[in-house]
Amino acid sequence: MNDKHFDDFLRLQLQGSSPYLDDGDFSARVLASLPAQKRLNPWLERLIVLVPVTLIAALVMRQFSMRELIQPAYGWVLTLDMHSLVMLAVVMTACLLIAPVVFIFKPKFLF
Image 1 (cartoon, rainbow, N blue to C red):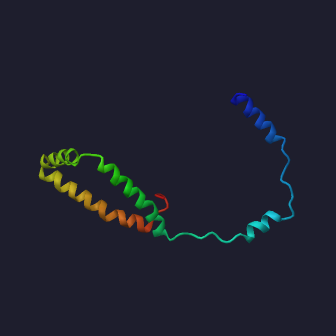
Image 2 (cartoon, one colour):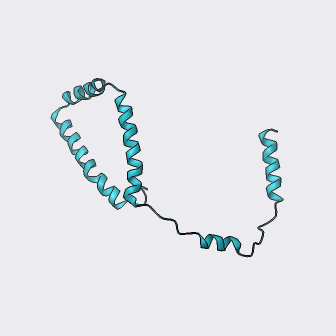
Image 3 (cartoon, rainbow, N blue to C red):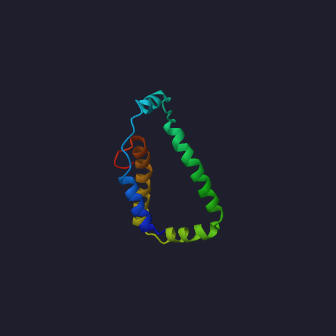
């Protein structure tokens, strides 16, 4: 049976299916009797994500030769003029100052 025939079969079965079966409010009572879902501390949630990502990143970085990573970056920094170096420092400082504020206040459009 190919996908088109299966899709047609499934569509017919779903269209011909009976509506909701009345269970005398059994489902609502069961859902109401379930315990409230516990939420983790937001810091713990972030930690649960951050630790494995950091470990994986460290393992990946271990596979690279540090000399091959640092030498081109060091050469690039040596070839920068003073204006570019100052602008790079300003941008990096701005990023380091803005990132914690964004994560603390969590604007809705970012998350």
